[in-house]
Image (cartoon, rainbow, N blue to C red; front, top):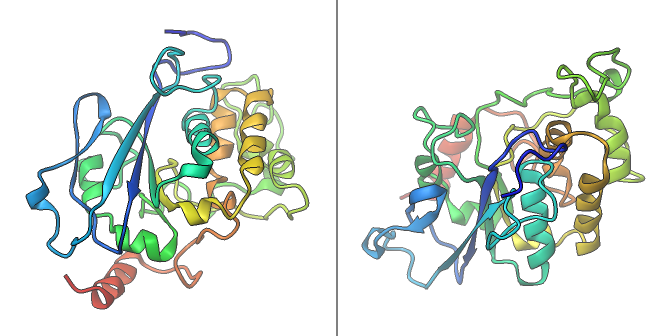
Length: 273
């Protein structure tokens, strides 16, 4: 394995991409994590009875620091951002109906669950909701990331060490404005960026293809060429995913700040079990 590269602050980084080919709106097939963070479908008898039509599932476990892995990346930089962008670029014309992007470890603090259990998070995910809305973050809790994780214009003026890319105290917000201008030319840089952290989400192929493949190639090229280190570049991409397809929901389907329990209750009324 290629470890200890000067541009990468983490070794052994892995992430998985799980793709669903669906033939109709249906609830999530229960899923389980096997060894090494692999994602598997459990026994077919546990699939909800309403799922009448077949659903096939593909899993892609990327190992970022092993060039000989079945799925890998051109350079181990940008954390999960490089993995996700590589998957989109390599599979743009053959994307599944739904793609779930996640880190590979089952138990991690990123998971919005009392036990930090990714399996439980995925069991609660409704594929019918993804197909209807086009996108859902796997994290509902506002911390970290909402309501104002980054203030690009204010932080761009920050003094050292926050603005020193060589410092361990450097903040991604100090570089977000200039990165945004490169990633999204002609788009006004927002005053505030608020999005659930940690870059784990489900999205439809239709949403992804709202932008041409060349855009995602350009985002990955930026990640490959930026002088920012692994952590800073990865954090900027982490807080940019909601911008990549042109109209992913920022808050909820109505664009309002609302309590997540209220949203969930509304969904249960609309789609009773």
